[in-house]
Length: 223
Length: 249
Ligand code: HEM
Ligand code: FES
Image 1: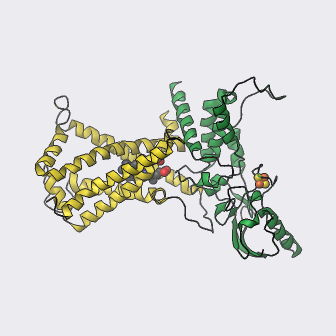
Image 2 (image 1 turned 180 degrees about the vertical axis):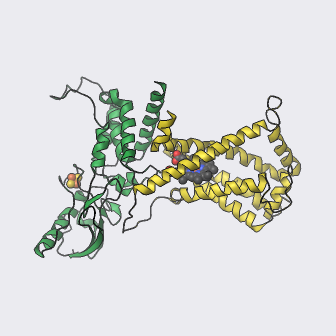
Image 3 (image 1 turned 30 degrees about the vertical axis):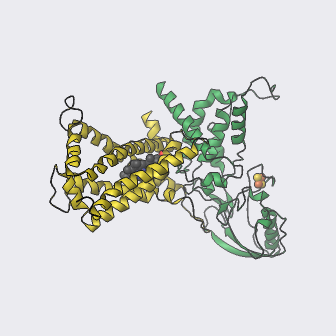
């Protein structure tokens, strides 16, 4: 069954949809966590510490966190690999363009590939910036995420990178959420409006929620 | 009407093609698009040039033979087949671009004619039912719920012209394949092959080199028969169901 899934264009698209939904679920949790930054360093840092102790005493320190990280890495790799392979197939299937060109499809639909690449690069940058601190601008301090976040958004490029990526994310989710419903066969004529509305709301809330943090630092609300 | 036509000319499958420009005059707005091309071809023959090759058969919008991408739209600006498109949809003095269907699974044979036998092979893979042939069976012998009959009929309208593939930026045949799968899979007559049909037809579709669906909706917009985009959703559902069942066996 695994082979059938991976060998078929419809199956590979299913892998994209499922891995996309896993990442989407994670992002909803992530944005809720991020917004705690508006309630001060104490609450934010405490939340970050709690992430490492979730599931204790059943789980050891950081086990749950690592479990989530592993699931996410698998999802990102599966998503990016199937996106690459499906895109290659699509481009091969339509080698010659029409002489008479027409603007096609919505902006969110046309930017899935470029938007996806921006998101992929962003994920790498984001981890090197705020998880490992490798490319961090200030003196990165493990266990002090509040200060690290403030440092990142005190640089112009930090703000630009995050805000551009979050706009790309909004567009990606706008087309992606609705698409995943079609791929998984749960879309229908009667549900179409509702699915599109949920996609728009999710895209808007996630983008606004994530962008609020750099804007908060820039305006001095968070410092 | 006086028109300038820019037409894709290509000697054969192996030759390089290019757009050629022609002028036609005295076109009646009541002519169909194909009749307008007939006028062009008579003109070309009289001047000793090779006429433009294009596909057509019934000229009543039911056979699916006609094609043509007209000003970037499969079957032109109206939601109908090229044979049912009339010149009143254009204005006197217009320049019209006429190109063949573009997809690697539909190679150009000559001028505007492409090889659509990939569709035949998708049908051969499962677009049929196993039934004894002969006289038409008694209509009430196998009851079909009204909703299912309507669903089947909506999909049975597909004439296999390939406009969906031509319009899709990925050259995908998902709308065609889903129309055929849904048409038969919902009916009791199609039930024995319900799982193998969708699996085999999708496999054949991939093997022919069609692209995948990115849900741009271009196919459904171009379809002269109004096969809806959710058709693809229904096929995905059938495919996932069949894959799960095959996994259990
Ligand atoms: C590694 C970075 C990423 C890349 C390269 C990428 C690429 C793509 C591409 C090219 C598509 C369209 C594929 C198609 O229409 O055939 C797509 C769809 C999708 N993406 Fe992403 N993406 C990335 C990150 C994300 C993230 C972070 C999310 C989380 C919300 C996400 C959620 C989705 C969803 C739900 C779909 C729809 C799947 C479907 O059409 O069934 N993607 N992605
Ligand atoms: S010629 Fe038969 S559908 Fe157009």
